[in-house]
Length: 102
Image 1 (cartoon, rainbow, N blue to C red):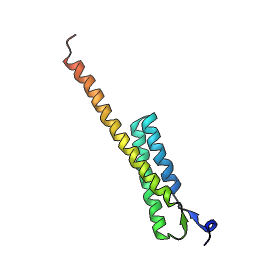
Image 2: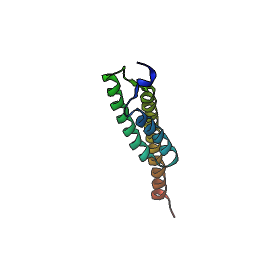
Image 3: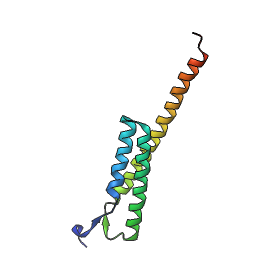
């Protein structure tokens, strides 16, 4: 089989796209959307990996699966860090106003 006869793994480019979106949305928009896109990216990576494992000789683009999975995990970690900072931030504000004497 030459290189032109190989097919792109179904869902591999989606996994990569959702991994990139999870990081971008967490950093520039808001954390929960990044976490949602992380889970979608991980799901697509899992489906694409099962397609590849069923017929490894017919597909190309396995790198997209690994990259998408890594980016999705990074996006999920960033979303969790963002969540912890938000809880601490608002917790400190509430603690300040409940203990302050006006």
